[in-house]
Length: 131
Image 1 (tube, rainbow, N blue to C red):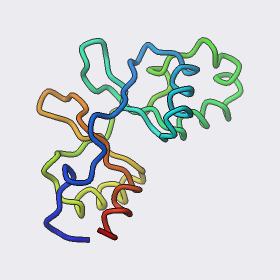
Image 2: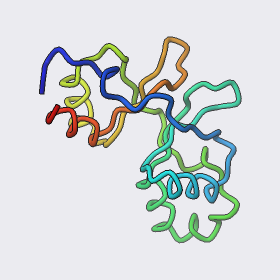
Image 3: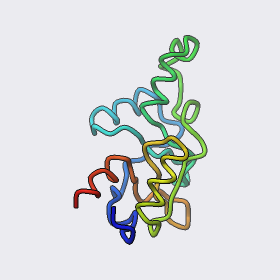
């Protein structure tokens, strides 16, 4: 991996986000239809408040109480918070190190207003090594 390359060069820009009050059914539908594994979660002002991943949905399914209330649950009730973020100017090595240390598959790239502007995933890092 080229030490000089930045997150901004390989991230997926303009990520699909979901509001924390959305239903899990809506979020699950977005993940499936867009063939993605996670969504930044924002509040009504557009500020990043968490991330909803397939792992979060599996956790809900594995918990009998949560699973029985699936239809009534909002994204904000089961998302991972706080969202792990990284600067657009960070190096790919920094992103890889942060993902490895925290055991996650994606980081949300935010601007100074904490608005999601991109996603850098393990897939992005893997693909960047062959470019």
